Image (cartoon, rainbow, N blue to C red; front, side, top):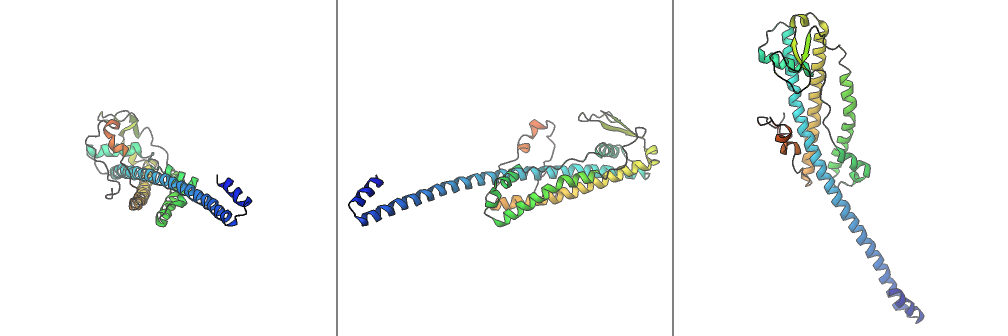
Length: 272
């Protein structure tokens, strides 16, 4: 309709009307482009907000698992300390031997890093990370990415420090039950330890010391990463992005039926 009217004005040599029609056409095109850009930006911001909320949930889950891991690894470290006491001649109580056998069962298998930041990597790969409005939050997320890339090589390097051989079967026996008849979770347990033989075996002590060192290192690194997680959560919350909840906590009874007495760790409320 505008084009037909413009043609008529040109034929009539009504240049004022032609100029006015031209301005209307250009303005319409500009406004259309601006509206399209505005809609695209609004969709992009909505997607970014959803991604940051998802990221807050992932970081919250990771911080919770780190706290749980730290508590579990401290049990191992305490148990290994009791083993070293026994090697030095101390008589352990039955409860202390339970702790010691628990630690010896797990000494060679420290847990993997619990970090799960799929949304953060997706934000980086799609270029959306650069569109996070807060410069401080962008910098903190970039630091988290850098640290997360270092975790796996660091953990692999720490495992390579376990150079002492596995425990001798003459010194340590395994079974699905310990020597008091207590069952495990289906994995092999250290059932008993011939402590006199262990005291005369320098490789046994070396294995315990190396395991102790690895677990201490894992605790310290998890605590550092946990502080970063909590800092990220605080920055996300300041921008209005908070986790909706914790799936494991909400469904704990279904996942771990005997968890009625379990105290859930507060991932960012207090040091574990």
